[in-house]
Amino acid sequence: MSKKYVVRLTHEEREQLTRLVRSGKAAAQKIRRANILLKTDVDGPAWTDQHIAEAFGCRVRTIEYLRQRCVEGGVEVTVAGKPSSRTYPRRLDGAGEARLIALACSEPPEGRARWTLRLLGDKLVELAVVDSISHETVRRTLKKTN
Image 1: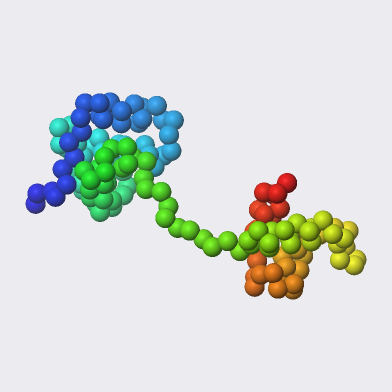
Image 2: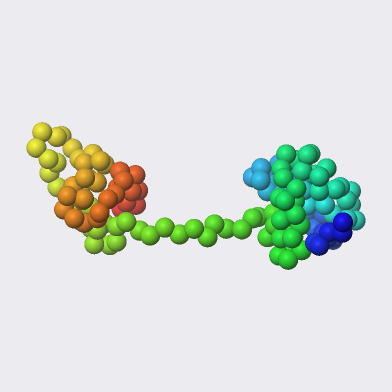
């Protein structure tokens, strides 16, 4: 069966990928992608997808995705990977952050020597600043303001 996306690397691209693999100074995922691209090059070793998948411990579909991305987007985009498109809504807006900071600077509750992150989160929920909040969000917000 003929492949829909055929990878033909230029001499410069092949050298760039070889340097990346040999240096070992990149993320393991980038090095693995570079190795896979080098093996799929029709002017190079031209390994079969099945052989590449066995050699690098991945699925054949992964090889097909990488070939497609290389043909459509280029070598740099393929090796770097696509950035995450996930976005999360913020729990605390500016007013909520100000409320948290003011609360953290105030006197701690009766019987406590200081505010804990969980106490601050519970107090924000009690004051109806937010519906729910994790202590980690409280920590990140306070760290950002220090």
